Image: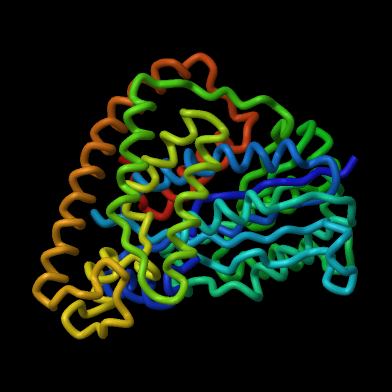
Length: 373
């Protein structure tokens, strides 16, 4: 039976895919780029569900990374491969999103993935990711590919060996996640694919029921996460749609469990959750808009009749309220992390997607002098 896969990390469509990250670069911040190549062939629904439920946990682990005392930017790209409904001429694969910083978008795309049978061409999807994504040229930044699946790694016309060597020449580390028995993954070339680039080979049980730990802080974190939404004011042609997407991803997380919704609230309080593209508070803070110069038709409905001074005062109050809520979330997160670490000490396992990815990213990031608080 053919299986889906998963590869992560974290997080994000460039909010204004060029403007935000060019600003990060100007500020001298380092970068973490993660491309997730997911096998969406038949019988992989369990793994897709695991990915959806673990996204926010993985993002929160990445959110504590620093380099030279600064929080790095995080860019996530998503590919699916092995799906028969995607034409054979296209290799049964597609780029779901290029490198992006929009966490809600990544979550939405994960929830939209479906599975059906197909041929899994690992070499081809790695080659496409290396060639078609805008990888950073700075070798001091962290550039990772995670590819997951359960069919032989050497299928298709594109040699996985050549594809991985091409990645290595660009300073990209290829990590492979085999969904099944570790010995079988070695025999079907998954380990060899990782070894060529100096990456890590991992085998997981994609159908395992991942344990979620309910913490005493979850209910309050959920409430604060919803309250945080009230500080976001949509503007621009796509603003209303993006605001609705924010609320939809809250609903998706809450539908999984209170614990996962709490993880999402924590992500929303992190530096990586930035909505400059559609939220006037983030946009004003980042200098993407000038509140005094915006015309009436450019303003959100609730600000149309405000004069320039009233606009700045209104946005300033929302920004302060947002920071207060984020501070409360971050304080609760410290308490929650201590509680969960104590509970899961004896149950921690590397046989799940989140554990495999988090450990791998930490190990490879530390070699690039990234630190984790």
